Image 1: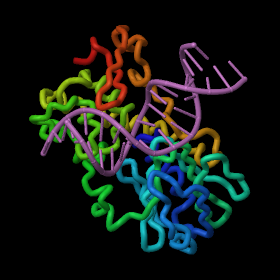
Image 2: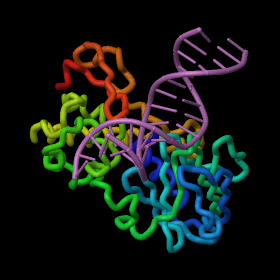
Image 3: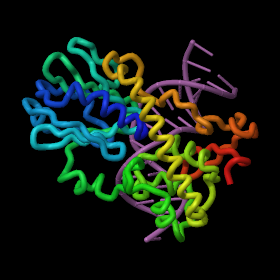
Image 4: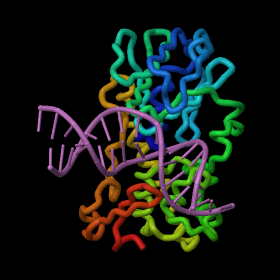
Amino acid sequence: MPELPEVETTRRGIAPYLQGREIREVIVRERRLRTPVPVDLEDALVGRQIGEPGRRAKYLTIPVGTRTLLWHLGMSGSLRIARLGELPKKHDHVDLVVDDGVILRYHDPRRFGFVDWLRGGVSDDPRLARLGPEPLSPDFDGERLYRLSRGRRLAVKPFLMDNAVVVGVGNIYAAEALFLAGIDPRRPAGRIAGERYARLAEAVREVLAAAITQGGTTLRDFVSGVGEPGYFAQRLNVYGRAGEPCRRCGGELRNVTLGQRASVFCPRCQS
DNA sequence: ATTTGACCCTGCATGC
DNA sequence: TGCATGCAGGGTCAAA
């Protein structure tokens, strides 16, 4: 379940092996991803040069020739660097073979991810056009959360996970940020004070930045193929810990469903 | 307009 | 041991 830190770590891990390289071959073993792999993918990529891989929200953007690949890892997708001759495993759906025996290999058991072309620029493509700011950019702050939440009755956790508000805050990090900020995930977004939103925005930045930093230490995984980038060994306070004791107060963590997502929190530390 | 819910898919944990 | 069931999750779209 790649969240933003995993996607960013993937970008950093694969970029040195791709940038400036020419694509020699494209192998698609399974076209039925979330959206079908474009029929012209192979023809359009072969012989073209790869530019600098970028990221917007959880989307990877990889310039190739005059076009740009838009790659989303969905829930179970991963990209890694394989070597020529390494046999594909089950669910290895797409290979981009570049010079010097390097293969960018896409693995995705649930096929919620996709690879497609960017239509227009990064800000024009319909999938990216309405996205909110990056959580680690200056455009994201407590003031924005406060302003956009006025009058909304939606619970703060799904509000925080709304990509029009801020991108890249998935279920894990939303739960962790709300714990750090001491805010009950069920609280209506419109009934939270500006001060508390300032704290929440800071908590979002903290958990994401820490995860990206930790991801940097596992970059070797993209080369050796040992293990897949999943969650980082980040110490989670609440996610996945329902029924266990709160690390801060010792009370029992509770689970509620918000927006059809499991939401674990500490009733004593979060109000 | 805002909010809710179904859907896509497979692996894994659980219970019988 | 095998089987059925439920859950997990991001993004998209339809419905309330």
